Image (tube, rainbow, N blue to C red):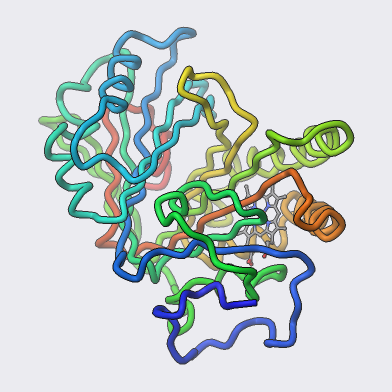
Length: 342
Ligand code: HEM
């Protein structure tokens, strides 16, 4: 077994791990391994929302523009859809770069997603972009199939030590070795009267989680177990965070379904949420009945099935510096994403 923290990011710990070296996780898990030359990545969530039953033409046009082959293309991207709490269908395109300069060139070449060409009463556009250094995020996989930012890394570790217990995420974060990652400042929204773009001012150590599930290859009892017993509990937890999360530090939560190139739903979903702090996210994971229930069910299932398990789980948790965040909303309703927090 090896540490979740790549060798070149390991330093002498100020904050010890929650579990000693003798702890043996009950099932295998893996973390992404980036080339040491990669110092910082970009995670861009570009959304378009509409109220109508059918997408207005501007939505298809904007997505086609995003999909067109261009220079400085992202290292990986995927797409997902959900209906939010205000009843707006939202198409989310998630893009990852392993070189922020490439992202800047890409944006300059095509114009901002919330630029004037997207100003229309038919749809709202938003971009939620963070550019963390590699010391500021951790990844966890229950299988060897990568998703999200880890696809851009292209490589996984061997079996890692730091998982299978509460506090594992913090122990996997390279910066967590020396820093408590406490939040500072407050989010605040400001509207530019000329462009109509609302910008949300960043906050220190804002936390983001993308926590994904895939059940493509499950069948029979295993599929019934996931869809009948686990998914409804997950959905209840996601609804709780979306509707009541503010009181416990969750600014916004989206439970989304990954779609394929034709727009059809796949057997993949993920929860995507923005948090006031890593500590608030940890507290929810460790103590909220919905996550405790799915955690227990998953521990039992993964321990029994081991690598033969066909439900695949992964997540990426990022704690971003205020200077590494950019949130913009054009024509969106006032409960969209971080607008609810500003
Ligand atoms: C079917 C869905 C899910 C299952 C089965 C599940 C199960 C688990 C398991 C087994 C762990 C421990 C992983 C390890 O260390 O080996 C874990 C950790 C965690 N999960 Fe989930 N989870 C699910 C969805 C979610 C979602 C949607 C979120 C948040 C949006 C979330 C937040 C967390 C966090 C923050 C941790 C890390 C806790 C810590 O290390 O202290 N989970 N989950």
